[in-house]
Image 1: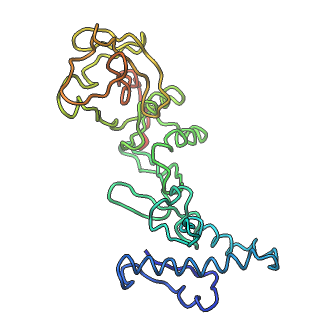
Image 2: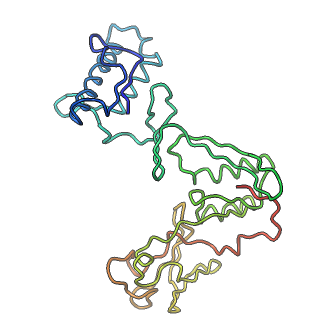
Image 3: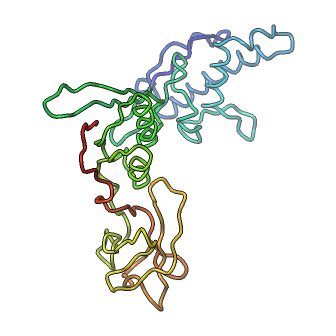
Length: 294
């Protein structure tokens, strides 16, 4: 991280506003905090001057002053004793609301697995038909914190608007959920191909009882059957991106699964199946796919 707040300077404190790399600040974490709060006090002087009663109103409309104000709201707060404090990575606004550079206020921070960056996220869609050139047919750019799966429906809509709807769309796991698989087929006639998020339930991890794959889902009649032959007694739709429905067992009278050892994911009245349910892939295939897009 580099401290580099350049647009305005405040009195004698202005000399401290040159770029400062955190790793080279003497005094460790305490030294970093002290320097950051010194910057904060300098910036607060500028903001106080801009909002003073005798200050020209146009100062408060300057882009540089507004950026400074927003940066200070993001990174500083007043404690109970009225002292300006640096947030030090704690209690920061969400990354989607907080820009990371005063020079590009559309750049946002994001972490994906082992990669962290400040900037944007771009999604490329290209043809992958055998024996034909691979052609990029769609590009979508968002702020970095927007998750890949939030773009699936938009990409399909944009392709349809350009009359480029594919028969199959191969994507990685981040773009796939049961709801997206169903919607892609129903709205656009697209077979969405990709790995579905695995079952992370206690039963799947420990081997106790039955995991979700052990249940037979009857989507037409909206019920589930456990390996012991018992039927669910209730079905409800859940407002979740990754869930198509939930089936609930009948409790102790007609258990959907044996009682596993240790903690379980359950609800009052029996076992609850929900997250990760998906329709059979056989219902999502087309007889004559023509062009695939990945």
